[in-house]
Image (tube, rainbow, N blue to C red; front, side):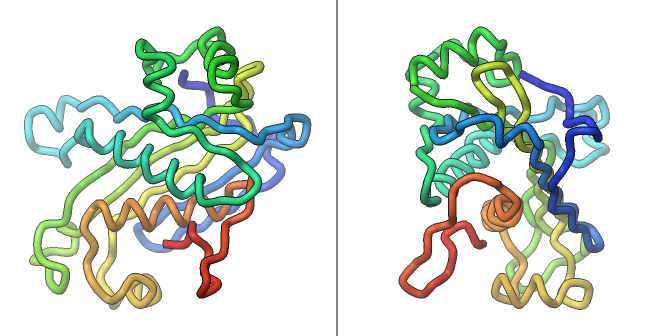
Length: 225
């Protein structure tokens, strides 16, 4: 299902940050408090279709299909590490409804999924950018050769299709001189696209309103990058 973005009138809480080439936005609907959401299913994600320019090779490559699987698994793993909620994996969703296509999930399918898996909401997502770096961890020929990740995720009620939370993220990793905080946080290196995706999911989930990040023995939240 591709529900519309939350209308401005229902936005009451959000985390919005952006610096240079990074955009991170999380928005919670005020209607969330009307729903009891404890069990969440992460449905298989989709990727943005290839544009004509990408098809002809003069634009950035479209996300490979594997990007959808990797991002869905990252969200599942990080949400599953939160206390107070139970999370169903994309694999279990596929097993429960083999014909389900995340891009065209109907309200009837949402209700069926809720009944089969005993969940109150699903997390669905679309990967828009998933570009591998060109170069090593210590040096790139050009700044634009850094890894880039972009995605949109939504928490949707299985009861009525209401969008309860949205998260949007885009980042092209910037050089240290432009983002010294980010480099120090991530170990002063250029990340692979998988490493950047892991960090990105952790960042956007800081604005997720359900559950509580578990604490490791060192006292660091599991959802932190």
